[in-house]
Amino acid sequence: MNLTFRSIVLTLAAVTNFAMADEGVVFREPYTLRLHQDKTHYVEYPVGKVPFVLNGSVFLFKDDYFGIGLDVQNGAVAAVKYLPNPESADVSLRFTQSVKEDGSSMMLLEIVNRTKYTLMMNGVMVTPAGKGPVGTSIIPVQAGLVNFESWPHPIAQLVLTKLAVK
Image (cartoon, one colour):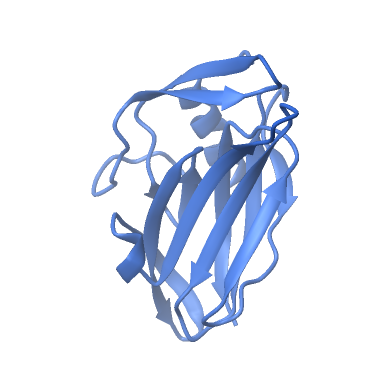
């Protein structure tokens, strides 16, 4: 993969139509992301200054587990806020990679919706083999329920965009 994670975030910023701004944004600590590719191979990427939430979009990497608060006004999501404690958040998100005995793997996103609204969103992902962001569908999560989304390949970064309620 030729893209750095900073350039991926900037590319996704262009795709999701917002500008990078550091004021009031919570950033993750830099680390090295390690993704399982097959039975014996891994790929690693440095993850630097990347927000958890920025201008209503949620940035996820493998092993993330956190919450978001939704500010709903007049039936629309006015703001999305990062919350480090997923258990007390309006919505909790867990993004994992599981590896089977045969070496194959899948990515799993668990969304717990504790609001009184059906939650809808779009997804944009970057895969290690990909050349840039690709859209992916996310099934609406009804009020008080849990949704699981899975993909049969590694995902370097998943961004949830256009959060809306019904």
